[in-house]
Length: 136
Image (cartoon, rainbow, N blue to C red; front, side, top):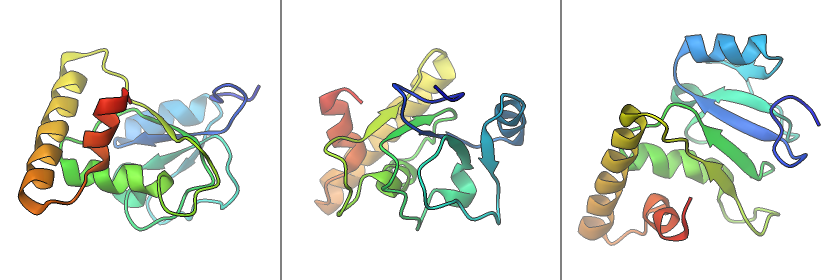
């Protein structure tokens, strides 16, 4: 099993801070920073949320871990939508969302509250709201 894979499958780690990228790189994980295009073939790697969290079709990945949690529903909608989108070849997409600190728990609660507000005011179904119900 390669470094960072989950159940023998490639994982895409989402990060925000350069320090996190450096740690992942030191562990042998391929890190994609701003301006770097992500390879189309699924492989264990890390991608910057600010640089790669919108507009990309990364549906070839089935597993992801968000290391530094966005605090807004719209940021999560974009991030989850990179993998969970029409045409995905997978029956299930798995996002691991660690909450081992108060800051992470607070970020997740803030994002969920924001997504709930978006859903209630616009009528648009939000992926974060659906994921909470299935235990993302």
